Figure (cartoon, rainbow, N blue to C red):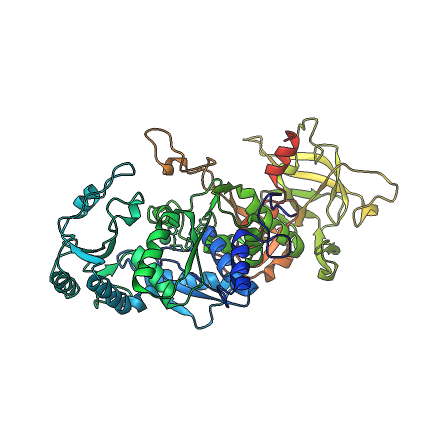
Length: 570
Ligand code: ATP
Ligand code: MG
């Protein structure tokens, strides 16, 4: 199913071009550029999320499409928040998504010396100065959106004084926060980003790559554009919140007279029922609200991978949502549909009973069993047929039986006949209860040997087909079901006196410790994906141990949201 909205920009596989492709094609046609060079520039301060996947697919995708290159550049200018663990996870995730940066793994920290020299150049040309205002004072002097800022009293220092102070900043003579280097642009600019932005701050912090070589660190604005220029980036694609930074991006490049990359902004991905900021995701991890960055409920790439998502589904999702210049929020079911469509094609079907209820087939001989044929994937004839054992004692889903069924319930009930998938018709003859609690603990049924394979030669019909496993042959498993991590559509929308954490869904994880699986699953490996008939798509979690498999439900079988919409006629 293609879910690209009718008015969405074009997609790379034909159709019209999205607005970034249009820019790239024009640049190539007019000769403004003779090549395409992009980059994906994560800050290694957290794990990547599905929003980053959009940026990765866009940047690496453009390079592939136009025979160009895409660099992986770590924007590692903030040592207190960054870590090698994040660098490694980012590389793993980009690779897993199916993209390669070859030998072009770069770090902003590789450019620290060059950035320093360029800062000196700006000081010499009177375009940067050392400022002694405190961070609070800097904020105060900056003005507001409606009022111009005030010049810093240090703005008119001589070039010599600035050079001396800047060098001493680098040499570690001053404590953290004592001074900054600022660009001398325009304190009255209507664009606040142009009001003498900070280029360097003093920070006596150990950096995961440069160690203790530096105690001044460049700001994002100072590092980013110059890094792009150094790498010959032709199209520097970033999210919309940097639109107001573009004049500054251009100003630095023009002052230095270096290669001019073009910054282009696109809308970041937002998803319903999801938070997408690394800071918030880090909070969830640190506070133990989830089991880690790769908790299957997290929107991180590693979380979705553990949940059972494939790289193909993630890339397809990014294709479906397209690239636009206006912010919007994508329904999370669009993401779920992308994996559902993929697994529908490729996941083998098996039977598993999540909440078992024992069934004894009273007219089936004790000690006997037989093998029945089951189709592995009706969407893929090449997947073939497997054999599943049938015997006197089975498990069915507790929910597939009701002692006193309402009108709409067609499955098993006393006196009623249903089909066991790939097997026989069975009829419920009697119910065994726990004498104390009254709970149904076992069903006694008879089977009709003439219905082998699931059809009655006399043409009689049943209203339901249910799944089952042979009790003697079944293997036990733990199954984890997931719901949205947040119970509100927009978790950042918070009632007075509450925080976004109050919007967490207390029922987002349901553990079913006593599931029973058909024996073919004994060969399942961590990461394997299956359709449990009637229940959804499931993948083997790495918590599995020999003889104790653990499964994650990746996604339900049907799109409940779409069903609801259809019902409501919307
Ligand atoms: P976050 O807000 O989650 O911390 P970030 O922008 O600070 O994200 P970076 O590591 O700087 O994280 O992001 C790397 C790249 O990924 C940037 O080019 C950024 O624009 C892009 N990106 C980040 N979040 C999204 C998103 N939700 N949708 C699309 N692109 C994104
Ligand atoms: Mg960022």
